[in-house]
View 1 (cartoon, rainbow, N blue to C red):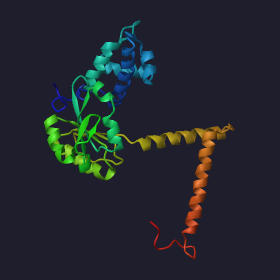
View 2 (view 1 turned 135 degrees about the horizontal axis):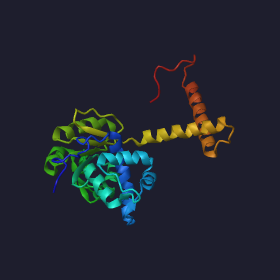
View 3 (view 1 turned 45 degrees about the horizontal axis):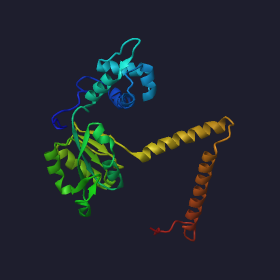
Length: 267
């Protein structure tokens, strides 16, 4: 069986833009749903709508794959599933190691979508000796002392970091030194890696903050237009105001007799 250590995706050598690569999984997800419903063909407009892009961009993306569809018929769903899967490297086995089996790491280990998308969880690793041997998603957790051996024995080239921020860089360096060339980082920190190592960062708090920005902007636009601000937004603004008032009262309470902040602050 082919493994990730000996085969790499062909996207870069074929000159496919990174923006197109980032959209290929969206197309594959939409196509897989169509395939499960036994839909034989799909138009560019229908597929673009399902993937959340415009049809012109979709046709441009598919042109990099050499797929142009048939006028009046559309795209063959099964062939596109195969073509995109091959381009993403999903027609082979990719052993993955997950390091850090706390709540997030355990949730990732239990995610059922890995196997169906070409990824095999080869090992679960944690630095806590008490975790060693405990099964998570049917896989016994191993101590991180075995990390390098596991990577070599299983031919791992993709590592997932779900450790606390303070341990992430050290784990990253060990992964890279052992031969891992792609890392999915869930730790809330920026990793430093050498050239030739790809890192994708997933930070849920950042995504929520971006959504909060858009919600705040929409509420501001509604207020400027004289529209009644939704009750949820009003409650959030009220809560924020209360927090600000409480913070101001606390700061006054913490001041010394002359209004200065005490030299020793409570921990």
